[in-house]
Structures are given as structure tokens and as C-alpha cells.
Image (cartoon, rainbow, N blue to C red; front, side):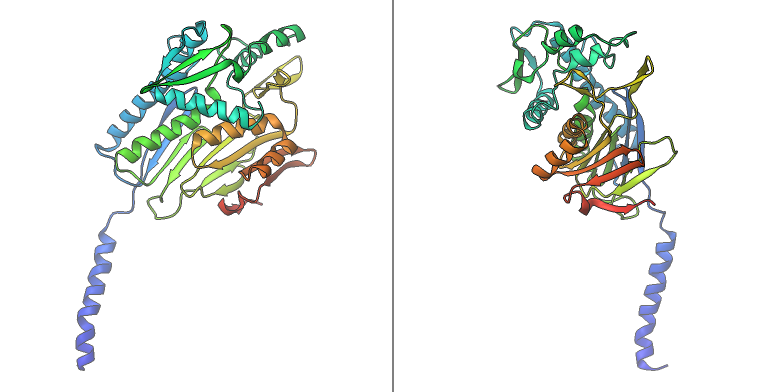
Amino acid sequence: MHTSSLRQAPRALLLSLMLLLAACQPAPTQTRIQGSTMGTYYAVTLSDPFPGGQGALQQEVETLLARLNQEISTYDPASLISRFNQGTGQPPQVIPATMAKIVQQGMDAGRLTRGALDVTVGPLVNLWGFGPDKRPTQRPGAEQIAQARERVGIDKLTLTPQGDHFLLGKAIPGLYLDLSTLGEGAASDEIAGLLERRGVHNYLIEVAGAVRSKGRNAKGNPWRVAIVEPSDKPGAIEDVVTPNGMAVSTAGSYRNYYELDGKRYSHIIDPATGEPVTHRLVSASVITPTALEADALDTALMVMGPERAMAFAKEHRLAVYLIEKTDQGFVARHTPEFAPYLVRSEP
């Protein structure tokens, strides 16, 4: 055997040993939990270990979501937001920082979108039967809508820092705060914060349409999120995106609706008219650093309609993806800022 062959032998043996050890290694695994919250579902997938294992993860996430519900659920008469809605607003009510962050985001987005998003639209939401109240047996009349609109407006809401908490007040007793349109995004962000504090940095969080992700999955690939076509075809997908550490939130008018006297009513209420939207925009997806911000903006875009939404998104250079229902079928459009996140399109 040549000297060079002698030198190569240990290397070949080492390589064979490495391959053997690799073959003995278990396949990469992911931890996944899921459940229900806020009248919808949540799922958390990790490719990092969680301290205490899957059981501890489930318990901590459930505890976090229960706390958030106690703050912002209008379906719980004992929640902080329900007590605020039932009261006169004077003196202002003490609320924790988590709830204040959601309220502030709603107020900021309301001003940015010129009222397309309004977290005080609750009286109209309830009037049309999309809140805790029962659905109407007949279409609300013009006078009912006008009366409800008098109790709507973020200018009637006040939020004041007070040490380590905040004071939430209202200018009129009948003001009704509804944070449900921001709840999913807030929950997704809160879970992400929990994971980061526990040393987990590779995760995918889904709270209905609000998604947060960071890092990679167990196979070492970037997390992927599907934008689903709003149709009755099972598994229909418009596009797939890689959020790359950003948040994705999608709002749609195609799931939460009802029919009355042969007409279809969407849960998306336009504060300017006091009525459900009637345009053809059926889905809006937004990518931003936080799910809370994305959750606020996607609802506002749904209120605006396809043309106003696209103009707004381009004006503010937002990563936005819209799906419109046309006579020829569904048509998707997106802003240039959204393009880098796209992976592929389905035929």
C-alpha cells in the first residue's frame, strides 16, 4: 500500500463512521400542540425543545390564552372589556399593559386608515348579529343604524399611561369597545413572547388567520404559510409564502356570514356606512413585524375594498396580498413589497 493510501485510510474510516452515526440519528422531530381559543383554533409548532416538554408547553400556552380572554373577550361578561362596556367609563378603568397595547394598536390603525378600522364599531357589529347578541330576524332599519353609529368613534375613547398600568376611559356611556378583530394577532404575538422567554427560537404560531414564525422547521427549511383560496374546493391554495421571521395575518369575508331574506351579509362592517361591506374583495393578507399590526391592517383593507385597499397599501409601502372575486373567478394581486415572501403559485 502506498503512503498516500495509508494517509487516506483513516479519513475513509472516519467518513464511514460519521455516515454510520448519522444513519443512527433519529429523524428531526417537531413538537406541536393545538386547541381552541377566542371562538377559533390555535396551533403551535416548535423545532426547538421546550423546557418541561410538550405538556408544559400546552399548559403555559393555555394559561396565557385564558388570561388574554379574561381581558378582551366580549363573550365573557366578567372580562375586563365587558366590565368597561357595561360601565360609564368614569372614572377610567385600570387595565394591564397587554390589553393597553391592543387598544393602542387599534387606535393607531384607526387613525392611519382614516376610520376603516374602528375598535368601537361594536354597536354596529352587534346590531347586525356578529357579536354576542343574537342574529336579527330582519334587516336593521336606517334609524337603528343611525342610533348605533352615534355610539361609534375612536375619538370617544381615551387611553392614559399610569405607572405600570393604563387608564381606559370613554366620553359617552354607550361606547362599546370590541377588540375581537385584533385578538388573534395579539394572541400570536403573546405566544411568541412566551417562547422567546423560554429559549425557543424556531417556531410557527397560528391563531386562526394570524401567524408568527421564526427560524426554521425540523428539516432546516424556512417555515411556509399557505394563502388559501376562498372557495369551496378542498385544499385550494392561491400562494405560499415564507414569512422569514415576520407575521402574516389574513382577513376574509367568505367564512363569517349569514343569509337573511335571500341576501348574504358579511361580518365585515364599514363604520362609514354602518352596514356590512358589499364589494368584491374577499381576502386580504398583510405581512408586518408583529401579528397585532397585521391583524389590524387586514381588517381595515377588507373594509376599504379592492381599489382603495391596493392604493392604501402602495401609499404606505405595505406587503399586501388581495384576492378579489370577479365574474371570471378569483383574482389575486399583491404589492411589490409582498413579492419577496412568495414561494410559488398554484396553477
